[in-house]
Amino acid sequence: MDPLIFGFLLSDGLISGALYALVALALVLVFAVTRVILIPMGEWVVFAPLTQAVLLEGRLPGTVWLSAGLLLVWAVLDRRRGRTPLLLALAAALVVAAGYLGLAVPALAPLVAILVVLPLGPANFRLFFEPLPGATVLVYLILAVGLHFVYKGLGLAFFGPEQFGLPALLPGEASVFGLPVPRQGVLMVVAAGALMAALYLFFARSLFGKALRAAAVNRIGARLSGISVREAGRVAFLLATGIGALAGVLVAPLSNASYEMGFLLGLKGFVAAIVAGLSSYPLAVAGGVLVGVLESFSSFFASAYKEAIVFALLLPVLAWRSVSSLALEEEE
Amino acid sequence: MLEVRGLEVRYHAAVAVDDLDLHVEEGEVVALIGPNGAGKTSTLLALLGLVACRGEIRYQERTLNGIEPEERVARGLVLVHERRQLFGEMTVEENLLLGAFARYKRGERHLEGDLERVYALFPRLAERRCQLAATMSGGEQQMLAIGRALMARPRLLLLDEPSLGLAPLIVKEIFGILRRLKAEGTTILLVEQNARAALELADRGYVLEAGRVVLQGPAAELREDPRVIEHYLGIHGEGSG
Image (spheres, each protein chain N blue to C red):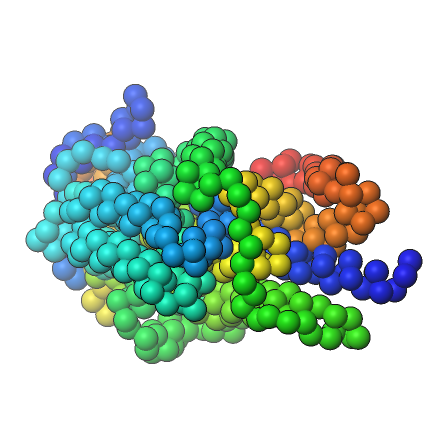
């Protein structure tokens, strides 16, 4: 193969691989702490750049009201919990204020978009998953699929069916090993790496991160240590939405954004998370890169089958996992 | 310090604890003894809020009904679970530090003193501070479970079967530690099948059978009580340690 084409495909694959790796990390984190397979994750990822795009068009996006509204419902549900409802109402006001700020100062729109999408995760956890503590993975999955349909519909209502192009945060091209690569792509990969490093430090060094890990591996042990499993769930959802929204804002200038792209994006992140057995963070990153590179090369060689090839990756992975986990199940 | 009235724990139709009254005063060590399935563990889990229950639980003059387990831990009601519930894939020191999470969350950042105290009580944990909890022996894991609970600075320490499944020598060591904690003034509610060791340590005791208190009094009197001797201190009782 022409080394130049190979280089382009590889860099393309690594850039989308960084996106899938981040989505996979978020999915693994949420699953480890709460046992929720977060299907609507993809919708939330595209909500961030779509919110940004609508702000740049000079309109206030529906996500602002959605976010603020969910926070207010949460405040009502937790009305008897001391200062919590007040803080939640304040957060709702902050989201609306941020929305207007984004209208006034277009340069802040990407940041505002992340801020607006951020409450969706924890608020959905509080409203829909927390009332069912200890439900089975299947019940949570059904709930998550339901939410996915709701958010897909909301996406169409808020943003319409068309694709939005977004200006690059870092315009122009950089030369990487003699290969012209959009600066935005470099930013995506570097930001993903920095975010992963930050997450690693958080989980390995800070006691809050360790508490989150503790809540994931042993719920009773966590509660005995004074760690609230509910709070851990909210934090996991918050981190996941934050990671997803940031990834969405970073990647959208390279690929455009439309409301229906979320599902496929989330699904590919999910494939990467499955490669990691929904449990290993490093493997989730590797899975994401693998999915990205595979997608990039298959879109060149067999573009009609590009999605099929990515999802076919599940077959050998699942076969391998089911063979290698037989021994484990016998132990339990 | 702790007052329980009319405690009832049910698992579906089965009644585990039935109309149980008990109290623990500040500085006291109280033993809860009885056969398997008498409702001892259920009582402790109910005190922590880990199982649903009826009846009133008052702790430090305030009711605990409707309070989350994490909040109870933050108030100094700390349980060493019968199954230890350690974080197996984390190191000894991480387990200990997480024991102090409720305090850390409140803004207490200086936990080194507490770590040193636990390491002084359990020198073996100090040697293994970087070892993963899951790779330790049963006795060491029990020490770690107690150490983790101490990191929360318990005002009332609930201990569930600390001698369960351990070699006699380790049991002796653990009870030695409990004696030291008692001498330091720690209030303890101890559930134990090893009635002999428990009643030697405790100031007072309750004997539970089928979810009810059948006998109670000062530990010294219980040790002399013919029913206790026959059922719990005799040959059978010794075998359960």
